[in-house]
Length: 241
Image 1 (cartoon, rainbow, N blue to C red):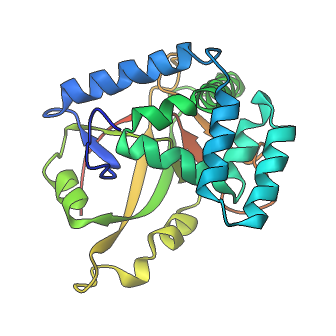
Image 2 (cartoon, rainbow, N blue to C red):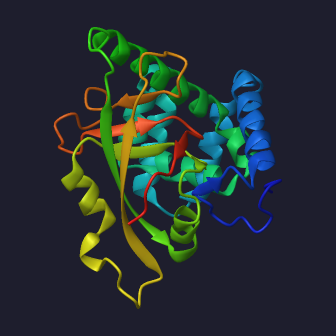
């Protein structure tokens, strides 16, 4: 059971001005989770969680067997980007802040964070000759009215994403993910939103890292041009239109 959300309500966004204490506690818990990566057999517990979740799905059980036999820390990106159970079952407890399930995933969270950081440092080294290097990425997402109002009410404030966050270098891909054809459909409980994220001050290797996944993805030839931000990345809201 989550110590934060007893009703297990998914919460993608976290506003830091009013929820600063919750953010700090959650961030500290994630640090502890990573420090305890080698405590017990985390991988076996995650695999057991997978098998329970897909008990009646023979195809998924075969993929779980493959994961059990072939997973390695340096392939965390590959497994995260694969159209499988890993990403879905990982991000749900992160969004609900379900610490019990998060703790089971500690080995994969740690591996993914480490690989993101390593990739980010390599990216900085490659672009070190560019002064004031900046990057713009995009994210398409359908948000509830409540989440959208949260953004509108927090212009120039900080927000945090509770899970790993995927974006793309390709704006057209983000628009597809936002399902913008249904934009502002009054009958829909979800609204299509296109995020534009400007990344600045990338000379500092201690900045919250991100990774461009094209060369690491399980499908390196696809056109999604995915960018992955590490868990609990903080963003500043500049404009909501």
